[in-house]
Length: 117
Length: 113
Image (cartoon, rainbow over all chains, first blue to last red; front, top):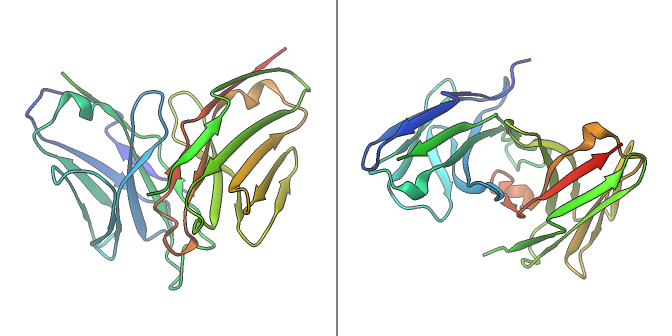
């Protein structure tokens, strides 16, 4: 049973550039969420995708955008990179039961370490 | 928005001892309380969760207690082993939108021989 997979594992970018991170959810899951984890901090919610639409969004600027594909995989795009965007980006998946995520806790991937220089 | 405080930030125990990590939250509407373990170079792994209609839940050496009145919940690990060494995060959410979790700042647990 494949868990959540993310690519690439590490990435180095320059300020002002754009980056795309990729995620494949755990088998059987249909919902993908993205989190940013700064060094020494807990993960912070960026947004959630379900049925190819952004359903919820955390307190992140519009430079952060995403996409979900028909096979439930997802991309996170960050434009105009800032030094402060350096972090571990985590993808998490779950299953929408039609009423809630009550029986489907989040499963996280191992993340993409983004360094902005 | 929700604010989750977690203590202590670091915890060192001897193998076989118990470890307790505590979290408080601010939003009384929160009704889902998971705990995650994060090892070096890996993503967070769910170790136990509890919902607001339950006061306590146990899974082998791990237990979580919830006090909704006081808005705090705790993780208890008994008979600690070296492989328990990791960073532990508490989080809160709503079962209707459980993808959006608010995490604490983490506790680095070190189990020494």
